[in-house]
Image 1: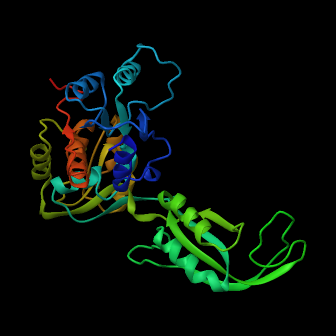
Image 2 (image 1 turned 135 degrees about the horizontal axis):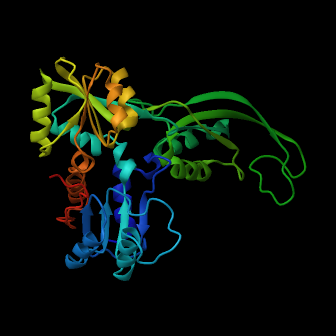
Image 3 (image 1 turned 180 degrees about the vertical axis):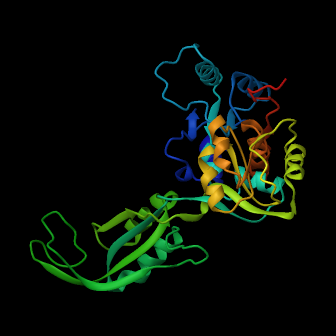
Length: 364
């Protein structure tokens, strides 16, 4: 198995198109064509993790966080990022990052938190926008079903729990084939009119390459006319954070105690008590202050996240319990999730769970 094949398996779980615009995901270091000797799964890629990969004969590190986030203007051993990348390159170790692509999917980071808390009726807290696209194309009437079937097979035409969705309208296409063209209908330098159908379908951004390939392969015209627009519609199953219901309501003290036990932590920073029972819980692994208002609008009694700043706690305004359990702590189960996934998808290639503790925050 080569690196590219492992990447494709990972992208079935978390398509890179689902990542946030600011992020840096995918293969960050290495060669897609390199044969994989072993896979090491980690939350962060540090020098110590690269050393562990060398020791375990793993030449592919699958990391949740990207070691390269901003641009690298030089590659000298001047900081922990450059040192890590240099060591990986010297030892022919590839590094793949998933980060917000995995944050946004149903079976990702926040699903792991929701499972730990045994939340029911889990839904996306902030559905992702800009992910759904609409294709419009123009097809001679006799070829519509052939093209439509090909587009469906490529992943177009799915809306929620419905598939093979499209809209068609009839009209007349007009064109003049020029010298050098190979027209399906008509003759060179003569205007031609053809009864056509305008076909419209939606698809998600991760399917775009396969959808356009299917269109060009199945369409009878030499030059296919089509246009693509990005829709403002949100994707109900993809997005940041999750929200669900506890098996039974608990008071705030019980809820915080439950968090400490489930996540193995001794200290939780939280906002002022609201004196409400906790039933509806929003979760967002990692830095989640931006989702406080969304959690309040969704009617959450508590919001579990990390990296809240001083003034963020004021935003609770007595209506919600904000619980900061720590960045590492909120994402600690992610690497287990990935190992389980890779083990199922590549049963003859057992990935290794990194034993290196990468949490940079210590508690006294």
